Length: 150
Ligand code: FES
Ligand code: FES
Image (cartoon, rainbow, N blue to C red):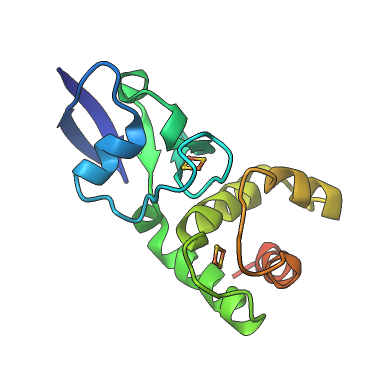
């Protein structure tokens, strides 16, 4: 079957099976920044933005995304570079496997929450696991990015 998606503001038509998940469809079509981790909705490394909200693409059937906007990290390249710089400056950049999904989530959070508390930030990020950093440096970097008005 064919599915129409708007990926990074471009209209795309993908071939898929009714039971395919968006993670597989995107990776089969070379959106390799969308990564596979647990495949069970627990780690968040497969996160994409679905109409601007972070969702784990390993749990979303491709057919359910028909006609919707999907954003991968390539679609927010300039902001992702800015976020990456804060991460680098705070020593929060280690293996990098979680970086694309985390950048998307942090970008969406900045758009959605105005002046979030520490608890609200943690709650927003709860679906994004990182095996390397211990989160403290990430939290510092994220708070600096959230305060960046440029
Ligand atoms: S691969 Fe989707 S949440 Fe882990
Ligand atoms: S930096 Fe390695 S998983 Fe997050």
